Picture 1: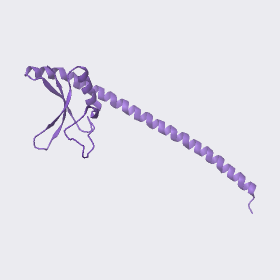
Picture 2 (picture 1 turned 60 degrees about the horizontal axis):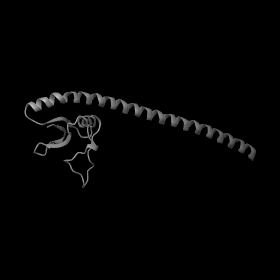
Picture 3 (picture 1 turned 90 degrees about the vertical axis):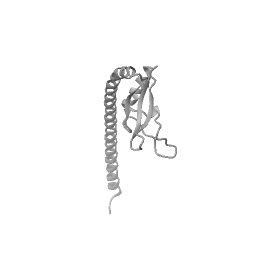
Picture 4 (picture 1 turned 180 degrees about the vertical axis):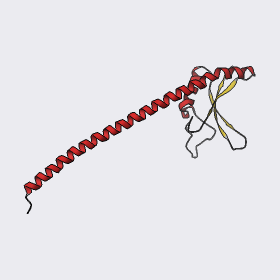
Length: 147
């Protein structure tokens, strides 16, 4: 017959071991979670920096483009052709989806930065839909206007 005192001691050791092992597992999990958050934050910051650099290059090309277009007698210029999922978040499919509308709130990354900088420069940016007339190709552009 097994002694209840021996069972109690063995049970107490198992509980102590479980408590310690669970504590280590919790701490390791928390550390891994924090490390993943830190990695994701670093990736977001790296992406923000890349987006800012790309936007700077695009914005630097806008004044010469405006001069060229104004010299040709136009009062507008396409400053950026948008790529779905890269430059804007497409609307979800469904009954209320309008394929020919892209809101400012849908812009992201480089496109959002370029649009904001054009807006701050009073270039009256708009997001305009275009298509090839055949239904094969379409998209959106950021277009600026001046008087």
